[in-house]
Each structure stands twice: as structure tokens, then as C-alpha cells.
Image (cartoon, rainbow, N blue to C red; front, side):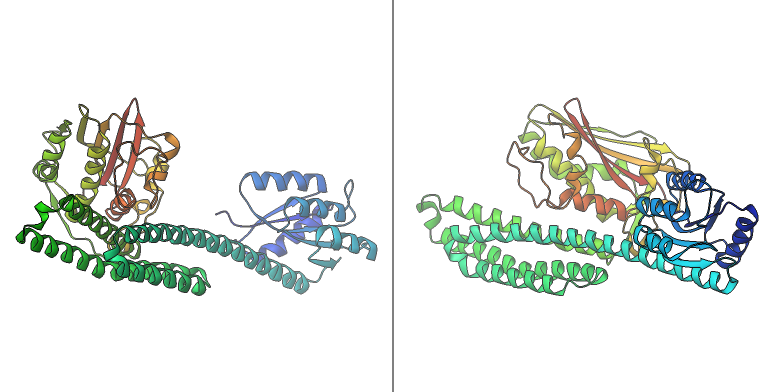
Length: 469
């Protein structure tokens, strides 16, 4: 951000020069000091500074000048920039002029000519402190509003999850008490969070604490439900009741599937919290992609064959090993392959491609260099921000699937937590709504990023990582 600017306006060059010298002694290099010999020239200067993204913190103007008078000039400055503080320096200003300036320009202070150096110093020092304090309050208020909005989105998502769980308990009366207790606990925790939101830093702590706590509380009852369902199925099979009861096996499958969905949601919430707080350290090791990729695709081969999809792998023969965290890398590629399998129609292809890019500082990825390197991520103690270093080589791993296209306006939203593209789930695929959000956070943890492009009926997710740390 540019340093604040001070504008001095007087039709006497010697006065301007004297004023600029004293201001330089007061503020040093912390402010840009500009001068103008008329109000008209000062207004043009003001517009130029704003165009160059300078914030004009203080204007000091004479009252008696050719053309526009000092009080009228300060009124125009106030209309353009209400946060700018206005000071009049004059030997001829009467009470009516001062009243006009106070009403129309919110005059901060009046200094008589000739001014006293100590009064000028006190006025400028207090004005700059007041301006900077106001700017800090404005910035913190905006940050607080943003955090509050993000927290509300998380709470809304948890409310939706609560409603889905409650509906499930209505269908399965035998589980009613367990899920009803959770719903009440969820509601009480929600109220507790709302009551404790008092400050920006406290908001972040409460959000993380709430997600972690509720996920741990859910894990135990979900595990118990899964175990009880499995034991009940075994007992009924031993008694020969499963085959005798119509749809009994189907009901057991529904119970198992729904329990697994809730367990996945809980695990994703816990992973998300760990990534946000930076609690989990990186475990770096050397990765040979040509040996590692077959291990990743093995669990998908049967599923791809059943859906009559085609899998292609394009790896350059001279691809060198690279350094990364295998656990995070596996979770990212598994999520991208899982989505590709879900949304690729029969007969279409899924293609995995890897390639290297030579880079220089500020041009790490193809496309917009500033977009590639200038966006910092919450990497914790174990990693450096992208913007602080340049890698000589970047590894790109892309997963392409054909048969479905993502609208341009949705391509960034799909990485948001719990977001789903409206009316796009053609095959009614399930999921927690956190997969891509977690994948992007894991990529950032590895000092990389995930991009998506979609056109001509195909979609490509590309993971970009530094070859070496």
C-alpha cells in the first residue's frame, strides 16, 4: 500500500517552500508531500494522487487565493474524500469563513499566519495519528465483517447438515434418540458460538474450536451405529432371517451407506480444521511418479471398467523424482480421480498427464504470473508462502475427463466448502461437499495450487507443485 500524502496549497511560493520544509522535518519519509499554488492546481493534483492509489491524509490550504477561495476548495476536497483531514492556514479568515469551513469541509484545525512551528508540529502530528487510527479502524471493521460472513456460511452449512441428519432419523425410528441428541447438541453449540462472537481474532478461534468439537462428538456415535449395524446383520444372517425378510439386505446396505457418508463428512471436517490451523506437520519424501501413479489408480480400475470408461496415462519417460508429502499428494489425486469417475459418461476417457515447466521468479505457471505466485496460503510452520520464493521447475499433474463441462462462473466456486453447482449432478452423485476445498488446501500446504479449465465438453483439473523444496 502507498504511503499517505499531504497537499499544501498557497499562492505564495516562499510560503509553500517554508511549509514543505517544516512538514518534512515533522513527518520525515513517512508521507508524500506535494504543493500547489492554487486551488485549481491542487484539485488536479488530488485527482492524480488518487489515480496513482495514494490516500490523501491531510490538506493544508490558505484562505485568500486567486480563483477558488480556501474554504470553497476544502469543501470540494471533503466531498471527494470525507476521510481527508482539512487544515486552514490564513491571516485573513473571519468567523463566517471558519463557520463555513467547519460546516462544509469538516475543518479539522485553523492555524493563523504566520504560524508557530510548535503549533504546526502538534497539529500535523495529531492529524496524522487521527487519520491513521481511522484507517486502521476501517480496515479492522472490514476484516471483522469478512470473518463474520465466513463464519455464518459455516454455520449455515452445519444447519443444513443437521436438517439432513434429522430427516434420516425420522426414516429410521430405531436411531431416533441418537440423532435427536446430536441435533439438540448441534443447536446448543450453534447458540453458544453466536453468543461468544465478540472480536475478529476470537471469531477464528471459536470457528475452529466448534468444528473440531462437533466432529469429534459425531465420530463416536457414528462408529457405534456402524458397529451395531454390522453385528445385527451378522446375527440375522446366522438366524437365517436376512434371506427370509423382504428388502432386509437392501435396508442394511442403506444403513451402511448413510453411516459411511456421515463418517466421511466428519473426517473431512476434522481434516479441514487441521489444515486451517496448521497443526499437521509435513512428512516430506522423494516421489517417483512413474512408480507411484499405478498405486493410485489401482483402486479405480474395477470401477472404471464397470462404468465402461477409458483410462489413459501420459508420463514423460525422463520425468525425475520430486520432493513432497505422499499422504497429502495421494488424497489430492484420489479426490480428482474420484470426481472424474463420477462425472465421466460411459465410453468417454479419463486422462492423467504429468509435465515439467521451467520457471523464473514471478512466472511459475503458464497464464497470468501474478495469479500464480501472488496468492498466499495458510501453510503453517512447515512451509513457505509461494510469494516468498521462486522455483526453477514446476511439476504439473492434470486429470482430464470428457463428457461434462463446468460453466466458467462456477469454476472457482466449486472449491468453496459445501458448494455444489445448481442442477448439475446428472448422476445423483453423493459426497460431503468438502472434497475439492480440501484438495486445494492440501495443494497449498504443499506450496502448490489446483487450477481448473473446462471447454469443448472436457474438464481438466491441474495440480502444480514445486519439483524440489
